[in-house]
Image 1 (tube, one colour):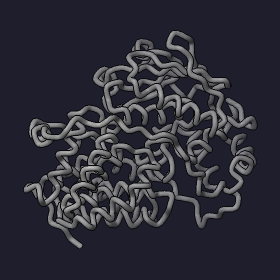
Image 2 (cartoon, rainbow, N blue to C red):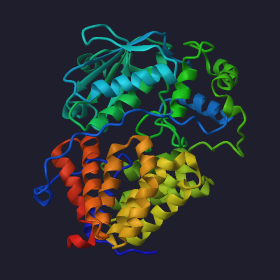
Image 3 (cartoon, one colour):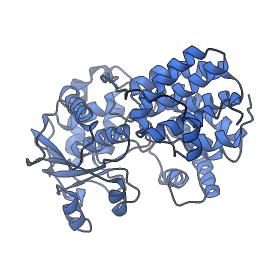
Image 4 (cartoon, one colour):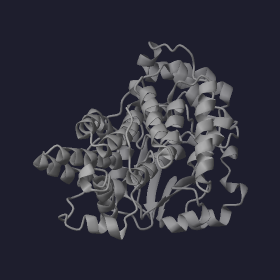
Length: 460
């Protein structure tokens, strides 16, 4: 199936990252939604039900070692480093209202699912983990590419600025962690702040590495997972198991890990795997980072995405790495070659559909395909695609992606003449959009972008 699409859909979809980033509101999109009523209250996810890891313990053990004994840069860590418990945490700076309930829910999960004794203390108290909230512009003035980040041995932004060129911040020399600082923007959307809390506190507690091969983890730079998964909590529980201790070498941990995982995840003992995932090569990572990173011309980014696809295929990776390569290519080709973009999304979706572990990745692809269908006048197909993945996105607690899917669904229902249903769904989408995108201007901007995809808008 091939669809003709307008420039508007290409611009919209090309802007959508795995996190489904907030739209850029313009005077035009604001005017387009000016007749809408006041936005409803922000919607929030009530609880998290993490799915237990679906992979064998032998594979998880290899993941643990690579996560625990290597940095993202590739530098090797000689020792296991972690805190001694109990662990205290504080938040300083101007703290948005959403942080309190989101952080409380996360700390509860750490205690319940990972068995980590961690407690929030007052902003004036001393703490092991020090979260400082500050404006995004100030954070990115020093670290331009970072959404948020964690560093060891300091407790504040001022301390970090003094020590940022010194060996104080080198994780390599750590055995026992005593204090770390996490820096998070306070002027982004509630979802972006929550995502930073999940990833950076988890890194402060445990693994310092990310692995592209992981299909079921936030410890993966593809950013499909926005909240900690069952796999992540198992890794953290193993990190703080009494059988391990700060300062252990890789060989010491490798000797104890099979017994730890057998005790913590007995179901993983009964699973088998045909072959362990092959290591991700540096050339593929470089191509992906060029394709998706800033500061590179669009044609060069497309070439890099195509190279990533070729490398994945040449290495025999039929897994999420090939899927992600195709997903990146699809996004980049939207404004250049709509047929190629569509086929890349279809191929990526077929790869992700082969496993229940990659349902959220498949849902991200589905959002793009639903938008294609809506723009092509296939409202019934768009509706089926959204309905098939709405539950997955809700379970993954991605409000931005959920809001986008619901907006597409509302437009499809309107096109099918089901106006009252469309209005109810659209209202629901706006509540999730307030959490996922933040400001009213951004919410209304995204709504106008989706509305412009429908043939009935006159823009397709």
